[in-house]
Length: 318
Length: 318
Image (tube, rainbow over all chains, first blue to last red; front, side):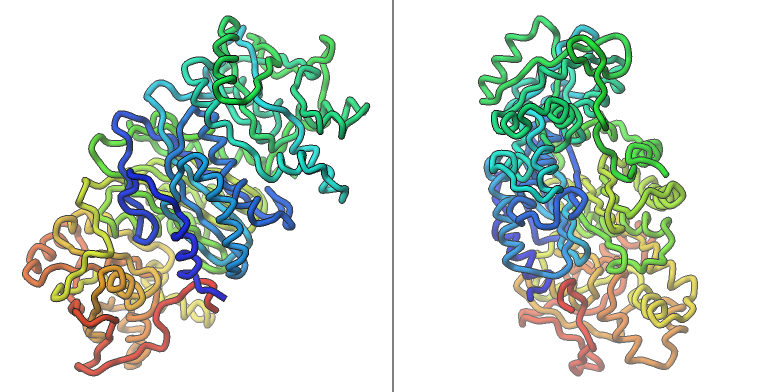
């Protein structure tokens, strides 16, 4: 079994480089040169085994996802990621596990030119805490508090796949690969987030569930929202999986978490700019509703109020 | 019992402010304005219950220490801290526990003008992951790799107190308050680290044990070290505790961890500058040895080689 310093050495050898990393892993702290004139954007998210991923998840996917959920937060700000740190707690050192974990983590990091600049490894329950630092031009960040009554509400990609995969997993059924990929290997919408800067009025990533996350935008902006539940975009695999069970479909799409798509609002006359941004980013976007003066998030079905079984999930609330 | 968002609200209300925090807790990520022309210094450290602190530690001290160990890393770089993030995993929400934890965390943060700018709360084994970001002038960081043969080796404050407290705790004995304070509420040597910038050639904070941490400097710098074991500075409480048991005293001072003092090297003719820096920072410093061309760290007792029972500690190595 390796000691802590061997684990660090294994990780350090894979950390990636950037010209703005003056000193990476190996000292008391990292030294970095920020881009002149840019604001820093910092996000931190922890994944705990059994809470945020099933214990039997392959380490490659745990590595990927622990970075992806943080990059997704930067995408939701319209920021370009640059550096990340990784704190890894695990019950015992396991070289093969660490190597596969870092394979997944760095596969995503290198796709976005992100360097791993520090962190630590400690003994404990399996838990991964990642921080990501990126840049945005001053005044260009996509915040939650900018939605305005009359804005269109948009969502990227498709909704419900990850929640469908999780429900299959939890009930011990086989999962179609396309759904499983969405749960295990979410795609942070970095390019779309950056392209929406200057177009969208507010943005959030869908991690707790669409209605819950849209609720955060509405609360921060002092507005409300109406969402047409049957307009929510779905993948063909998701359609095949849910079949004729429309209520399950609606619940998974409106209240299921872990999709890591972007939900954003933009002025009604900015539709063409939104679609141009989506095209240049290689991801589809769908208009799903409208921001209202009246507070609260209302899900509508053929114009009537519709209520999901549960709206998102809170940790500690069970 | 509170939900996750109530816990976040409790923490957010206490986060502190700085003019360079454009957007703090409450969005997908924080927005920060770095100081023009400065390098960023980033450290991350995790504390797990039962590994880094005994389960019965009071939450105030857990909060203090989880920030202190990170500020100590910045001190060892000669950096001025500015912002921190906090990821808190706990088995269940507990308002009184969180309030006391944040009391300790923010007591130290406000002493150093550090704002809490983000993080998350999740369900899991009790674990605290903190990241700290600070500034240093380009070229002024204290790194581990700058020690030169002939340098004096110095250490701040006193050594052994925290290890003595831990050994008493582990054997179920009463602890003198002065020792317990050193274990529970370590003092990051921020002012000293900043004052040593431009004077010291290399620096590290003593977390794993003096000889182990000095070994990191020697390895990074391609040099060795000789340390006079009986020159290590001790507090009067520590002297009273160890009494005539000189071997226990030496082992606790040379190999015990958790003191969070600075160990640094400086040219032999810089002694007066070192002492001026110490005086202006309000902390004592003691010369404990000399950097050598010959590799390895040698502990000496009256000029003869002396061997501690264990040299520092590694996680995963047990």
